[in-house]
Image (cartoon, rainbow, N blue to C red; front, side, top):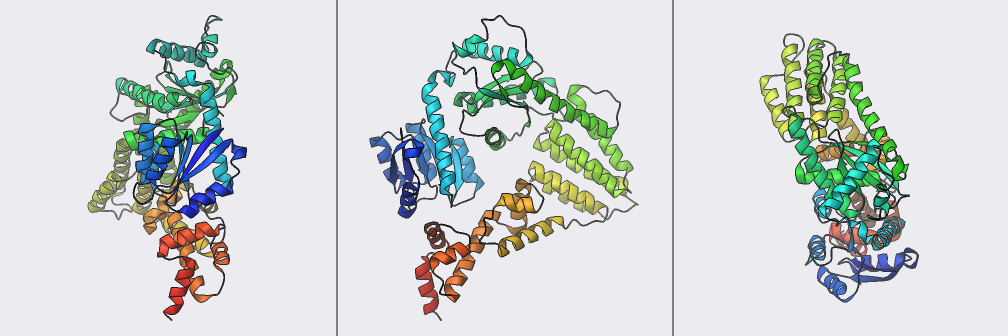
Length: 517
């Protein structure tokens, strides 16, 4: 049995969480509560705490300060963050401090119970597999990596070699495994030596984020690719979540976003080569599709594949300046190539600017209304854009180059606002809105913030509470019914959110609004 600590400066939230979940079913012996960071540290000092659920935005000691202190004093504690603020800088800081999960208020009690259940499974696993933390000597680590590399490539070994993974190093022989290839990527100016150094750097990061957490084994294969063998069903995350966390940290901390190819899951180490070969096949198929789309028979070396493909693409775009649909078709090939060969952000910016500039000069005298001043503006925009934003900007400018204004983005945001305004009482989320608008959630989030200046979740909360203000002022509906009508199933969460938004509880707000009439 384990102990959990719930920390929030809103007593109603703490008690609501403590009373709403059946802790016995989750193997939680005691659920403690604390109403400040200082009080939480006192509880931890006096009791054995295994899991902490904490808010971030608290008076006095903030949640992030509390997490930082816990990490210094007791790094084994599993930490869950529960906050009403959808801000990436909070998520980034939490990732830096190895927070297990980051949840937005209001969170459904079933969802929260599921997250806690996952943490209990991890604690069970860690308590039974302490040897598996890979604190062996360098020679032991090298032997593990050699054995796994041999398994990936199905090299013949003596019968006594592979059992070492199970006996000496305490690996589970029946675990489900799934291989992920992390490609260092190809820089326009790089060569083989640079790529190899990048692979080593990524592998070392993976060892810290994956191996040290007993979530998998990281090696570099004979072709120089980083290969991470994940243990499926053992850690606290799905593979997609593990990879998302890994890529976020690589991007935030190291300004690097690798190309990732995932193989199929397999059971047992003797089948590990099947997952690896599947991932390699997917990679080769993706790279070959670029060559086929270009219809090129020119042989290319590994280090200049993208450069050759890009130059060929640029020439084809220049030849098609009077054929806008063909331009867009070729541009999609370019986007696919960027993803396949995992360029750095700087190289993407250079290629995007070069592509538009080349198309511009090829189009002079045909249909171009672009000026040199506009090209300068494009360069400034690309210099401050993320990878996907840079590609979206380039596509938009290519459309403008041929006299077509792209109003699609404005249309998407307008439709999203209409859905939100009409359906505040429903379970609105970035994911289901993006699905209805036929775009990816990440693209939709960036688009919405860029065009409105606020996040989609923030917009939904604001609209819900503004409607609640109107209903409190103009009707006699009870606060509970108003909460339901604006999408809050829990009156306590509604009251807390409303007070933070207006400074008054729903009852006091209604009284104050009517006294002013």
